[in-house]
Image (cartoon, rainbow over all chains, first blue to last red; front, side):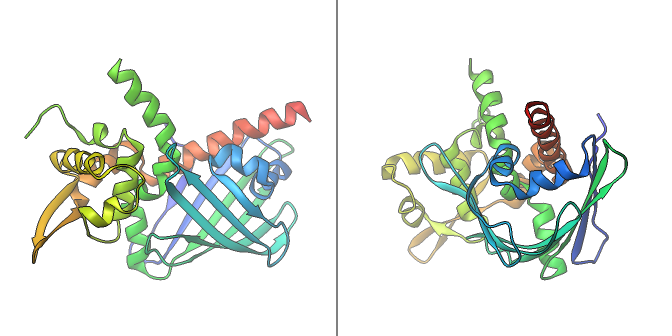
Length: 156
Length: 107
């Protein structure tokens, strides 16, 4: 099946563009990114803190069933324009990856369709490439529920 | 090599995933790894053994200590299979779409 999400990572650049069209009005896609209860539902993280305002900070966390922290990320929200755009810093704690800068823009295509564009800037080309090479580190907490199901089924 | 063990078995366990994350940016001794968990030392040793048998970790003696390193080539097998970056975002955004469709229905 073809993926709906486009990831553009030009060689030798320290940036990345992620684009995606949704069958949703632009306001809903914006809300999905700026309301803590909704973020929790689709990202699968706990949202420990989220201040929806300029200079407001956020903190996401995922723990294993044993209580080991698998993923923790924090940052600051900047330049919020309702249903249009915001900027945030993103730091994955205890990974050695530098803080990245993320520009989110939301565009209305029609009443029921919209487009999200994420422009991510890393500290260096090396950092970006490391992150691209290691979707595992970032994706582990996203993929792990599904994986666990698959693994359990295969053991039965 | 134990053929029953492959990389996917290795990452089916949350503690082993946590160990891999710990080692993603630095090499560590078994003792240092175990100190990060509440589990008993032999439990962690068993996890390290499985990860080593799956070739996700290499053991290397440095001085009197045995250090565990992540094997990036083997990690790549997993990356290629479960979570290329694009797929990851695609899944996440698909999830977003369904969460928000539900939300809209309820609103």
